[in-house]
Image (cartoon, rainbow, N blue to C red; front, top):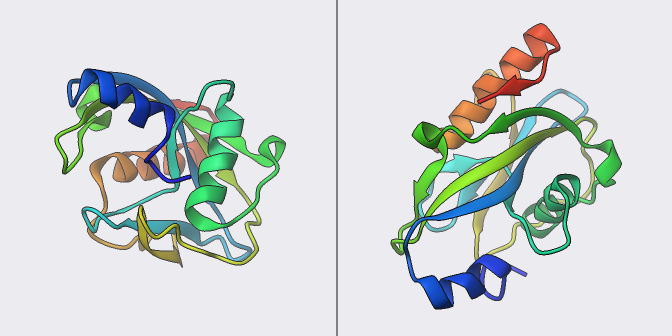
Length: 164
């Protein structure tokens, strides 16, 4: 679908660019070698993980699976997504987009092991897709994506859900 026509887009028609609280999800999709899927944003050129805001009627897993499919072409069974962290700290997840829209995003972060399939970047949002080792991510990374990667590393090290 892309951003145009989405629930958030429709809200923006009424409220303009002012700060909105937005629930959403992010996904670290891992290939068989343990590389993570990164995507380079079409608007800013920074690297991040697939993800986005919720649409009415979606739970966090459905958001994660839908955004992964929309942005990358990969199809994940929502039940195969493993929650590992939340990201809501406004120091990392209060965002201003190039058009001036502002959000404070509350994301549940998932890992999807064994990601496979044909990659297809959603051209209006994603300039490039690449699997890279989690210890050698592409640069520059968005600040929220860098924080999600920190939370993922802590999750792997401890096995405990991370709140950030």
